[in-house]
Image (cartoon, rainbow, N blue to C red; front, side, top):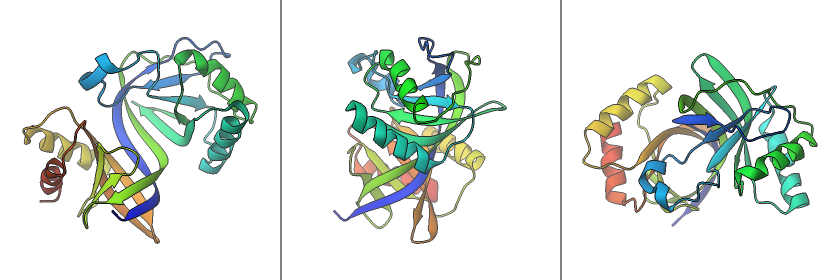
Length: 228
């Protein structure tokens, strides 16, 4: 398969919680569960975060977050994946560092301390109710394999596919379309998100699908429902 590397953003909606165990001066940490947690929770180590957001006092550049994450990984022999992130909960908007690769919730305090030593300032612990619905937007790199002219697959996760949208949609249009698609397909246990890719001076609107043992036939079926 032909491989591609892109920079882009992914937007998703998930129920989030605040991590209450952090002792670092009331830093606000948002816990983002796996989008398929209900599908395989019993096989997951509940002490290992899927993804967290360290909420900062101001928006920091993607470059600064990447450089600092690399410094911390090198210095402390970690394997963190850092990204610029924005979280909206109702009328509230938070900026932060999205992290994957955190070994245990008990490691979060040390990780916050490490990022503080890189110059980041963190938001104080404001109240977030359990399982509040949040819109999460993450800057990230995409390593992909070309499956067809319109379908791509993650090079790192064989259960993660992407396809191009024929017509760009804003977030509200995408949410309504996604509800319609989910109600008109005989498959459950999958997660859908909206993404954009920057490629050769152009912006491509795409859809991300994650499902254990995801087949190319299901991806094509969902693609048809979005584009036709």
